[in-house]
Image 1 (cartoon, rainbow, N blue to C red):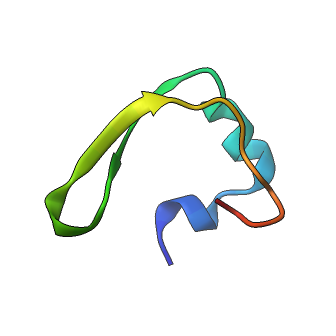
Image 2: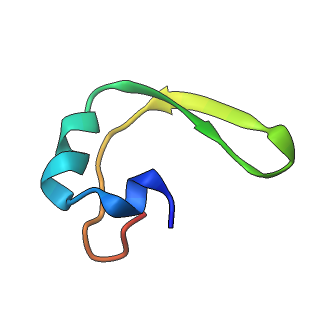
Image 3: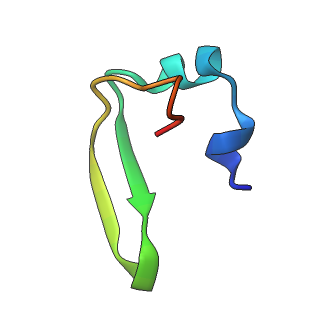
Length: 43
């Protein structure tokens, strides 16, 4: 389980309208603005 999955939907809400950087497979990184979060699918 990663750090994101340990957070609650209320914690996720703090990321909305913020710039984030995401580390993906094979050392790829993506960055951008968080527009919304989906508490049902946790994605």
